[in-house]
Length: 148
Image 1 (cartoon, rainbow, N blue to C red):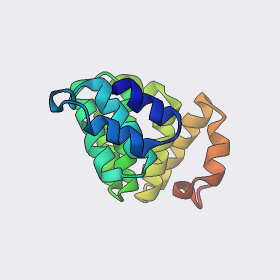
Image 2 (cartoon, rainbow, N blue to C red; image 1 turned 90 degrees about the vertical axis):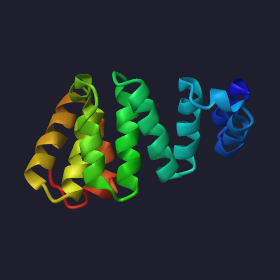
Image 3 (cartoon, one colour; image 1 turned 30 degrees about the horizontal axis):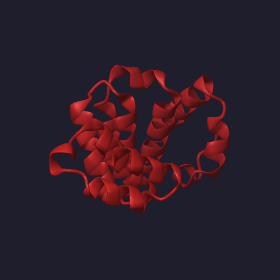
Image 4 (cartoon, rainbow, N blue to C red; image 1 turned 45 degrees about the horizontal axis):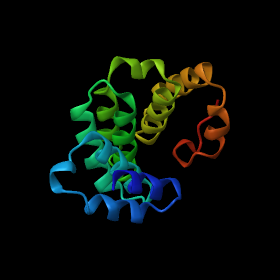
């Protein structure tokens, strides 16, 4: 059933993936691979509340994996809980600060929170690390009005 859930996700059918996960024995629901599949499906369906909770569970079980913290923060931000998203991102492993996406997301959160100078600093850091973020920033609703 895990393989089937993964297959449904690959086919762009997250609802079917969640159905497969629901059919797993309950004692498997907390396994890392199952939570990862659930998170991917919930995010694809924009079920931000459920996805945030799933991502937090993954963070607690794998405190050294930065992607889970990025996902938890993103979901919280999508729920309008931007300050909580910022705090959650800062709880992640130190390696996050070496990732352009960390700085880009932090810029989005800080800009949304009105912390303009800090947002500019993080955005500049993201661009220095990976120029491809410049294209994303041009169209990002979270960065409307920022100049760089």
